[in-house]
Amino acid sequence: MSPAIFYILGAVTVVSTALAITRTETVHAVIYLVVSFFGTALIFYMLGAPLVAALEVIVYAGAIMVLFLFIVMMLDMGMGIRPKRSYLRVWGPPIGLSLVIAVCAGVLFSRQWKDYLIADAGFISPRTFGYALYTEHMLAVEVVSLLLLFALAGALYLGRRD
Image 1 (tube, rainbow, N blue to C red):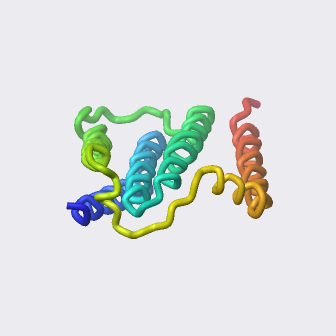
Image 2 (image 1 turned 90 degrees about the horizontal axis):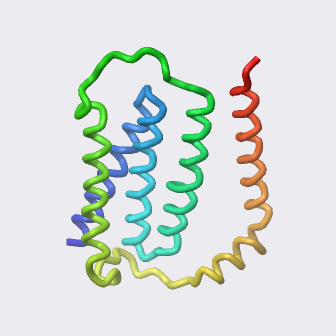
Image 3 (image 1 turned 45 degrees about the horizontal axis):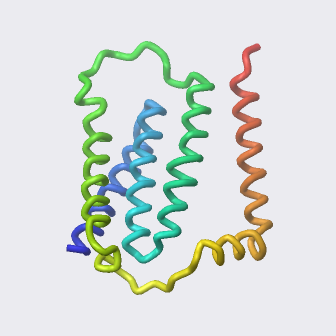
């Protein structure tokens, strides 16, 4: 059953990423991207990296997507007059993909997680990970934080009212 769940999660991740790229409404694209991040987190979990899976959910699906939604709503993108479409047609695909992710997560977390590992990975504690991140890779962390700061400043500049 483990390879089947892995391939289902892979398919959901690829489909939701493709839908995030092709959507014209930015809020829908962000929702598809969140589904893709959750699928990626579950794949990391299955590959024996629960810490990376937790960081994927906390950092990407949580913080970065909230920032994206904030910027999309602040810039007032795509809020023009839209044709009426059925509720099921608009929200059916993200809800369906999210349900598949939820079912796979339920199956994975209902049993011992080591039963579903695809690869035999080594264990690293969060303390060791944090120490390595903020000592050996401190420059990369600071560069990423500066990039996020510049992106926020650019969004504020673009979203200001003249």
